[in-house]
Length: 421
Image: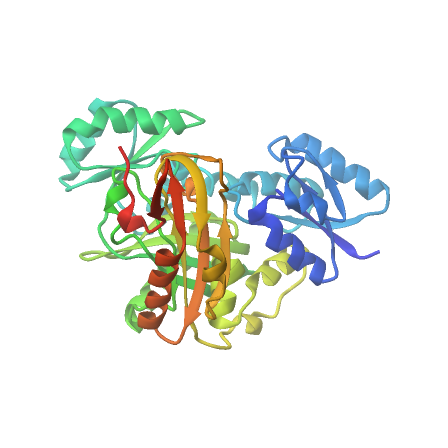
């Protein structure tokens, strides 16, 4: 029997990892609290277990091992749960993040403290317990804006930019309403280009096949919420700045103790101080970054590499060298809240030659929510071409082609035209 990989989660974010592992000739064990999670139906062994119930996950694995299933590793994709991956890998003595790394990488404040201790450049930060503390930090830091977030959430949940003092109370309440552990982090808000990176780490050696410019421009209509609208590959930053970002993410991975696995970095380029680390995850990104964007742009599939590492196999780092250099972008749909009556133009858009992917998460009859976090976006598309200008034209055409009828009114999903209360 082939060796088996345990994947924590079987939703859309984990599907690509499950499919990739199976293509590699591995058996896949998948667990997810949602019995309808699509990955459960294609895994070789599946159980509807919420992966936060780690004792149940371990017991299920022990049962499979006793039945002859050759489980050798654990991983995930898109779920910010390195602390759970580390508990499973530590229990079975598999390759994975240490328990300390799991904690540091899933707690934004502890992460920032470690970064500061290790000399990694980060924005000013503090734990805040009330509005008075927010104002005190803001006055002390002497910065234009601050940003508030729960220490234990991802996907922009609970995050707001604070631009004026009369926004402080509502922003604190908003962040607190999304927090699980009740801890709220305040940071200096840095204006500047943001970069997404994914670095493969093998025995302390680093390779960064994932490197993209994130898209936040023209997204101020969502403020005070922070909303990303995809990214661009390859990045437009120059070689000197690129090397500074690479150095920053490698030092950040070292600070978190990531020795074998993946380090997902969110970096901002401060006009005065240079690259600064916003945060780092000890996992693969969800969405399209490692699944579509990087392979399409560079020909590199490092999800395979991450699976090899989890299975205790020493990967060939030469496989992470770019094989091509295509311009690739992903973008999202942002229809306004209301009742979705209909969608038109989808089949026409699918005929676009340079379209790699088009997924809609909504259907007629759905009640569309106010979009205040990444998980509430209505769909995604991935396109490619020879240069940014031509790819931007394709993006514009798709936004103009696909329309949503919301409360009887036809609207586009283009974020520049998004309206909310």
